[in-house]
Image (cartoon, rainbow, N blue to C red):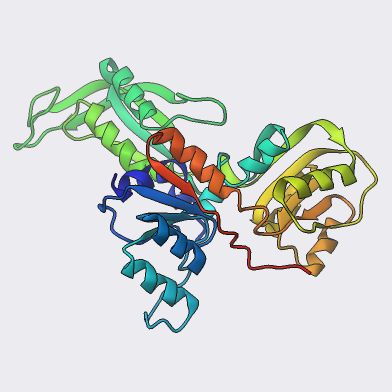
Length: 364
């Protein structure tokens, strides 16, 4: 199988356009057309993980954290990143990262903890902004259904839990074809008026190319008229963090112990107990302090994440219980998430979960 067959599928689930501006998700080392026979799944790319890949004859490593975050100007082996890049190239091992784009999809990093806690009524904690567009096009009445269904199949028309959403308005279009045209209706050189339908539908920005291809292919006109508008609407289907409800309210200490067991945390740092039962749970794998206010605003009883700084614990203000279970601990299960997503699409291909514990933080 080619590398791009696997990475394109991953990007259909977690589009690269969803990543944060500072991120470096995507194919970092290697050629998309390269044929491989196995993939190693990991949280981080370390020398131990790379050696594991070499020993197993793996052609591609898929990691959550990008090996290269900022640009490299030299490859002299002067630091650990350069050494790993050189080693990967020498061993002909490609490296791909799905980082913040994997954080923001509901089936991504945070899905594991939601499933482990058996949360219900799950939705995105902080929805994505600037990720939706609106398409407006004009279609002759007899071809409306064909064009509309083609756009829906390409991924347009989803709003929340509804799909095939559109707005339709009747009107009259006018046009005159030039000498080099072959008009579908009317005659070249003569103004023509046609009963048309104004069709509007919404779609995520990463599907723009596919959507326009579907529109042109299904539309009968030689020249297809359309407008694309940027929207200020938030994308409720993707975003940072998830929030849901436990089947039954739990004691704070009991829930903290359960989280510690599920994640394999050595220790959980937390704010003062609030002395109440916990029902609504917010989660964000990795570093999540930046969406603490969102968890408070949505009345979460507890916020499970990692990397809280000393002063950030004060931000709870007695309104929420913060449970800092560690960066590695809240994200290392991404290997299993990768495995489940990829195995469903490629059931006979060899995906291997790395056995290396890449956590750089140790405790006495």
